[in-house]
Image 1 (cartoon, rainbow, N blue to C red):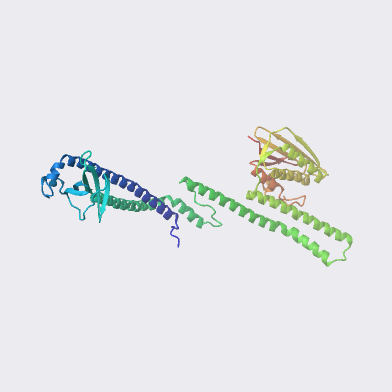
Image 2: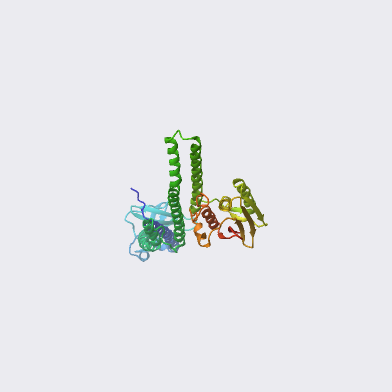
Length: 446
C-alpha cells in the first residue's frame, strides 16, 4: 500500500509540514552544535585560567598535602574540577571533586578528553615551570556540558515536531481555501451534460483561471464539433433520402425489366447518373460545411485574390460554356485567409450565377477594394431573389419557391459560412436591370 497521500490537499500539507520540520531540525542542530562548541571552548579557557592560578600557588598545594578541607581544597570544592601535581607519572598532590572512578594520569601535555565509566572529563596538562619535571593536571567534569547538549537536542526535536504539527494544521486550512476553485471545477465537470457544456469561470488564482478558460475552450470546441456532426448526420439523412430512393427505383426498374427498350434504359441510366452526381455534390458540400462548423481549418496565409478569382472564372467558363463570363479587376493588397475556403465561396457564386441566370446568359465578375475591404462582386441576369427571401436563401438547403436547377441548396450557405470564417460579409442585392448581385467582402491585411 502506498504511503503517499491520494488527495492534492493532503500531499501539499504533508510536503510543507515535512519541509518545515526538516528546516527547523537542521537549524536547531546547527545552533546546538554552535552552543556545544562554545561551551567546550569556555571549559578549555577555564582550564587554562585555573592552570595559571595553580602554577602560582603550587607551593601551597604541595605543602598542604591531601587534606580535604584546607583552604586550597575549599576553593575547588563543588566546582566539579580536579587539580593534580604529577612527578614522573605519579600523583604527588590532588585537590578538588573526586570522580566515582579514578581518572588516569595524562601521558602528554595539552588538552585531552578522558572517559571513565559514564563520566567524561576534560584535562589540561602543563609543566609546572620551564624545564621542570613536575606537571600540573587540571581536570573539569563535562557532565553539565553534555547534559546541556542533550537538553538542547531534546528541545530542538520537540520544537521541530511542534512546528510540523502547527504548520500542517495551518496548511490544511489554507489549502482548503486555495483549492476551492479546483473543487468548483470538479463539481462543474461532474454536472456536464448535453444541456450544460461549461465549467465555472474562475478568476483567481491565475493558474486556475487559465485552466478554467482552457477547459471551457476545449469543451466549446467539442460541443461545436458534436453539433456539427449531428447536423451533418441529420442534413445528410434528410437530403440523401430522395436521391437515394430515386436511384434505388431506377436500379430496381432495370433489374425487373431487362427487356426494356434501349432508349428507355438509357433514360433510366442518365437519370441515375444525375442522381449520383447530386449525391456526390451534396456530400461534398455537407463535408465542407461540417469542417467549417467544427473549426477544422488549415493555417491562414496571405492570398492574392486577383489570381484566385481569375483562375476560378476560367474554370467556371469550362463548366458552363453556354454562359458568358467577364472579369474586371483593380490592383489590391493581399488578404489573410484560407485558399481552399475562398475558392469554394467564389466557385459557388459563379456556379449559382450561371445556373440561375438566363440560358446563354451573361455573368459579370468584378474585383475591387477600398481602404479596409476587398470586394468580389458577381452579377447575373436571371430573375433575382426577392428582398424578403434573401436572408433565408443563405440557409442550408434553401432553394427558393421556383428553383430552376436541381442543386443541393448549399451554395449560398457555403459562401455565407466562408464569409463569417474570414470575418467578412455576404450581401445580396438587385442587379441593374434584372438579376442578382452577390457581394463577398473580406478584410484586407492591416
